[in-house]
Image (cartoon, rainbow, N blue to C red):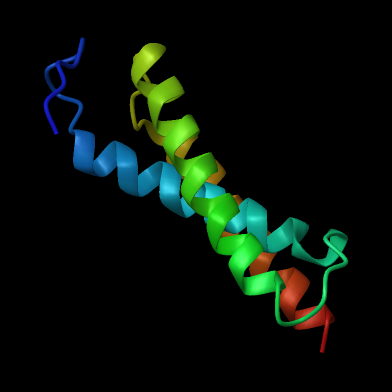
Length: 90
């Protein structure tokens, strides 16, 4: 991928990985709200992850998103929420 970043210390691979993990966590949390048949649900969820990760990464590039302490805390809290939601859904 050819892109220029406004901040030289921001790496595109880390930004893409951050947005992928964040979007995946939120899609997993919102999955019970999508009342589809069990056969269609994985296809819908994977399509949502791909599209939303692309949009999120592009917006992150546009606003010169950096991966600071606040962003890492948000990612950690999102995955802890996924863990708690899965723990209580058993």
